[in-house]
Image (cartoon, rainbow, N blue to C red; front, side, top):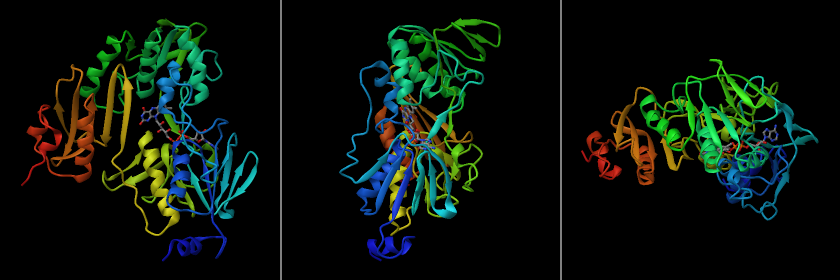
Length: 416
Ligand code: FAD
C-alpha cells in the first residue's frame, strides 16, 4: 500500500482529505513528535498545543547552565514555520472527548483525526508549602529564572530530596557559592533508583562539594527564614527547593475514558497507542509494556522523549506497525561527575563492579542469565556506549572479564 493510500485508508475525513494530527504538550516529546511526522513524510496538518507561553525549550539545561546563567535559555532549534507545524502556545488542554474526536482547550474545542498526548510530568509538591514565599520547584523555565537570582545572592538554601534534581540543583548552588543543606527522608541519595551499595559512594560526593546531606530527615514545616525537621531541629533557609519527584501531568484527562495507570500515567500499548482510538501517548506522561524487560516502564528521562516520538510518527503514518521497546538511557551531571545509566535492573539481577567506587571513574553492571540488562557508568562514557550495545544484543558475557575495568566492556562477550 502506498503511503498516500495508507493515510487515506485510516482518515476519518474520508478519501482525499488530509488528516489532522493534534499534539498536546510542547515539551521534548511533543516537539519531537511534530518534527518526526514531517521527517517521515506526513503531509496533513500538525498542530502543537502547549500550556507554557514560551517558545518550546529543553529541560535538562534548566538545572545546569540556565540556572547558573551561563546560558540564557534552551529553546529547541526547530523552525516550526518551515516545517508547517502550527504552534499554539499559552493554551492549556482541559479535556478530551475521544468519541467526538475533539480536544477541549482554554480557547475552545479543537477537532482531530489523530491526537498525541505529550503533557509530560509535573513536580510533586511538599504538602503545606503551596504558595509559601521562598519555596521553589524546578521543572519549568519560569522556575529556573526565579531561582537564578537566588543563587546569585549566595543564599542559605535547603533542598528537599536527594534525587537527580536535588543533586543537580545542589551542584549548581554550591558552584554559585550558596550554603546548601539537602534533606532526604531515606537513608541515602537516590534511594528510589539505585541499591544501597551503589548509592553509598555518592553520599561522599555531597560532603566533598561542601553540601550538608541530612538523611533520615523529614521536613515538618517551612517557616519564614527556616525549615523545621521532624526531630525538632531548624535549618536556616533563605530559599527552599523541593525535588521530591514528578508525576504524570494527566489530571486533565479525568473523565475522558482514557486508561490511566497506578501512577496516574497514560497506559499505552507497545505501539504507544492509548485505550482510546486514534489517541497516542509518549514521553514522561505515558507508560508502555517492555517485552525486553518483561514489565511496564514509566520513564521520566530525556532519551525516552526523543525516541518514543519516532515510533508514534511511524504508527500514525501507518505503513508498518512500529513497536516501542527501547533500552532506556539517561544521564546526570552532579558534583563534577558525569553519571550515565542504560537499561533497567531488578533487585534480583547480579551486580558486578568495574573499578573503585571511591575513585573518580567506575561502573556497575547488572546481569541476568549472564546477559547485561543495565549499566551505571560514572565518568566512563565508553562503558556506557559499549554497554548500551551489549544490552541491545543480549550476548552472553563473562562476569570475570566484565569486572576488570582495564579491559573494554565489549571484550567480556563469550564466543562459545
Ligand atoms: P515535558 O518536558 O514535561 O513537557 C510537557 C509539556 O506539556 C510542558 O511544557 C507542559 O507545560 C505541557 N502541558 C502539560 N499539561 C498540559 C495541558 N493540559 N495542556 C497543554 N500543555 C500541557 N533527563 C535526562 O535524561 N537527563 C538530564 O540531565 C535531565 N535533566 C533534567 C533537568 C530538569 C530540571 C528537569 C525538569 C528534567 C530533566 N530531565 C533530564 C528529564 C527530561 O527533561 C524529561 O524526561 C523530558 O523533558 C520529558 O519530556 P516530555 O515532553 O515528555 O515532558
